[in-house]
Structure formats: structure tokens, C-alpha cells
Image (cartoon, rainbow, N blue to C red; front, side, top):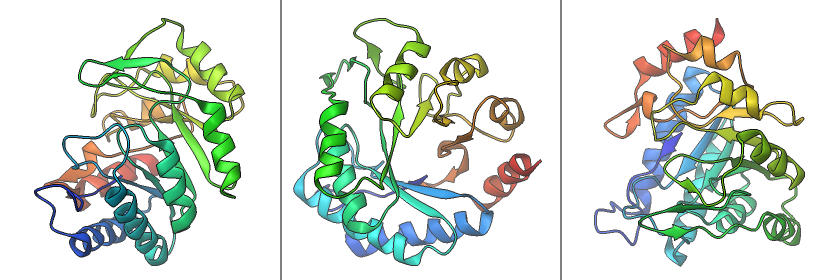
Length: 243
């Protein structure tokens, strides 16, 4: 993860140049640490909006393009929080990124502060085609952290539905950031023919057990110190991953 500082439009923003410098510095640390990809996210735009403001889309495009241009060894993706996958696709397409993450893809889910989230996987993939971005992968969460299912169903059912609707990879989380999914939940999501990724809670202490049950992981919380990548934590985790 590259967790961005507050972007323009938020009171604590340091401006677009500061955000780009932060993103490129984290990119350098992550590349040197040996990761395969980076996911840029406007984590500290608080409070999050359900759909992106115009200035957020513009800022994310500028930052993502800068990271893509500076990247030497990793693939780059982006996600605009909280639930605007079309905006994420537009940014990725215009900036040259290779993938997006979307927290809400096929599951009807709700959170007290936001209500029920709008989902339409068919329209999302139609939009991807309409802007010529079919090469941008969609990494889709199933039964994502923090939210409650409106209609209860097994995790495997959500995985199969997301696969049928065109997800390029499935993401399984715990209950909150820093909370790992159970290995059996990762195995429940497997078998559809697309990769299964851990979406929260991977760290050096559980990497061996959890990575044996899936295809990869998106890692943020355990690698961060003062909102930036911590080199020591990264080195420790990657040593476990390589083993």
C-alpha cells in the first residue's frame, strides 16, 4: 500500500507536490524491499466520501501517473475511497496503472455512517470497456471489512458470483484494517479460477500460514510507521514471504 496524505480539498492537505513526493518516497522503499506491486489509496482523505470529488480524481490521476513513471520494477494500481470504482478505473486508465481495487463489487453491504452501498458489476465492466481500459484488472473484495451483509450468504457464494461477474482477483479481509482473515476463509474463496488475495492483516507472524492458503496479499497497516513505509517492518515481512 501507498497511503496518501490528505489530498487537495481537505483542510490538512499539504498540496499536490507534497502528495507526489510522499508517494514516490514510499514507492522507492517498497521497490527496494522487493514487493511485486503497489496500490495507491487516498487513505487520509477523512472523512471519506462515497463518491469522489472532482479535485480528488484530478489529484489521484496526477499522483498515480507520477508513480507509474517513476516505477522501475513494480506494477501500479489505485483505489479511490470509499466506493467509486468507476473513478478508480478512469484514473488507472489515464495514468497508465494496471489494476484497481474495489471494496464493493457483488455483495449488498451497509455501514451505519454511509447506508447501503451501490453495486453494479455489469455496469462497471461495461464502463471499463467503454473507456478502452479492458487491460486494467479489477481486484474485488468479497464481504469486505467494516461492512455488514444485507443478505446473508456463504463466502464461497460471494466468490463464485464475483468470478461470474468478471473479477480478475478476489480479496478476502478480516473484520477491520490490521485484522487478518482466517485461513479457512481464504480456502473458501479459492477454486473459482482467479487468484485469491489477503486484503488485511498480513504480517511476519502469520505470513507463512496465511500465504499457504492463497495467491498473494495486499499489505498496509503492518508496514506503516507515521503514515509512511517502515523499512525494517518491510524487510522482516519480505524475508518471511521469500521463505
